[in-house]
Length: 113
Image 1 (cartoon, helix red, strand yellow):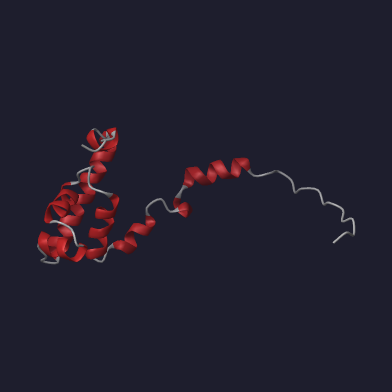
Image 2 (image 1 turned 135 degrees about the horizontal axis):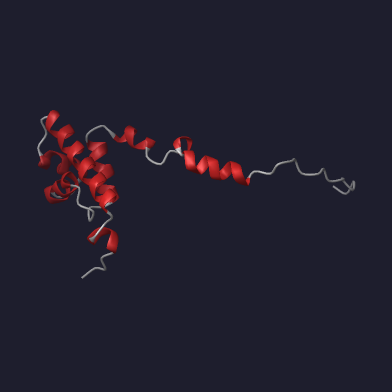
């Protein structure tokens, strides 16, 4: 039996809710396209159970399965916004706090190239 991490067996409530929301959104997108679960599974080369687990927002489904369903539905470009450094306000604040306050001194060249 493979090792199960805590994140897949008992994820934080926020993670669980986000996965359920994502799965529900993927299901809605599939139904709007009038595709069956088997159609998506065939495109991905996986089982219909994997696609069903993604649509249920199961934490044990791999990230590749989630991104694969996005790809099969033509929604993969939207995933580029996830963790986009340009939208990471906290990261930018932390980075700016570490920037030097003045330029480094110029070093003299000794003429030995």
